[in-house]
Length: 143
Picture 1 (cartoon, rainbow, N blue to C red):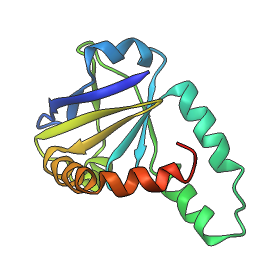
Picture 2: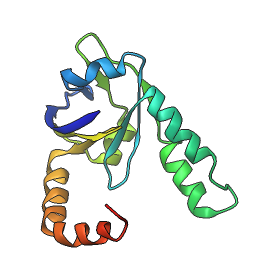
Picture 3: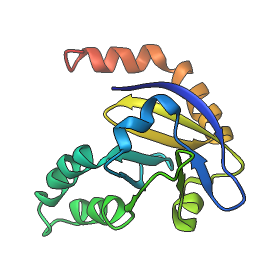
């Protein structure tokens, strides 16, 4: 289970450390893809396979499922951690997420998200400001 917020630096080569407590989860590899809201999604290999299987089952005859498949699957990269527990984020993923030198890793139970620190602060402020409205709408879904 991934939870919490962690600040990390992105070095000049595009490497970023995964929080120490999460590293054992990525021994068999890590898959990073474009996420939603211009962040990156980080999955354990097994979780990625489940997620990708659901996307694969979407109808390719419809434009939205095709676009979502391209965003998620076409933008994915299978990576490994180096001896220091870092991943080398490809340029196209860093560009997509607007990553600068400071990033925030957010744990969301079955995946991590990587955000540029400033983008995360802005997103979090907007979300916190509308928390009551969000909670009310989720209440309609039984949450």
